[in-house]
Image (cartoon, rainbow over all chains, first blue to last red):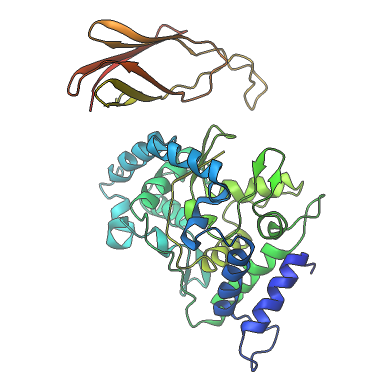
Length: 282
Length: 103
């Protein structure tokens, strides 16, 4: 496995923060999350921790002003309305999304993805939504955009401000999924030989042509997002698959185990940061 | 169907600031779909904001305007509680109209 140099630095930090009794290769999510946050708060001392959820808009004053202006009349507004309508509309069998989720699906975004101990795998919100549809005899939605993004936009909106609360249950498989996600995140791939961390840890806050790369900390708190570049909404799945093709790799199918694991890892290390989705990005 | 126009107009006493977001594909006619066929042009041609029977803002748009366009402008006058009328006509002849109360 190849690590980016920043990843190495992170690993070193992780090790330093971990109790001496823990071996270097034993996963230690608590220390990881602490080191992850420390890396970003050290790198961007001017940015408040909870501000990282605004991605590129937290990186400089001009962008921050743009974001404030955008938030007054956000481009995701239509998706939000559509999502609300879809969410409350019953299925053909009379049931609705409310019946599939705890607390009727309101204000629960911060708990996803979670580790399902029965299944032994990570379950994301997008996956849970499609499972809910299929269990009620409805066809699943595409994972990458419109309908799925509208639904998750509405659900994220009802959770705004609530801190990410991803739990790793006392189950070796959960720790394994977390570790696999972490490995995926730091593993280089594609023709450009980039890892997720190359852009979002090592180069977070720097420019790639006209865009500012979002720091990985809090990056999922804003999902789903309206991107001006897409002129539309996209989900976490869309972000993962497009990232993979942008580094000239072959993307996996959305909601593959690897993607779910990386979402689990990346959400866990952002624990405590508020949900800000749906977001808007340049 | 819900209106395709979202408006917010706020009066500061002397001037009124208007923001609007319109849901429209704004196809330019130069883009191809996944099958390689050209997506026919379909865009808003005329956008008007009327206050007190007079146009305070009018735009003649073409295919160069982005999808789901956003407009922001201010005009002199406008009282709280008065109505602002917004309408658009697109290249296929479709229209939509809405009114908003100035806040």
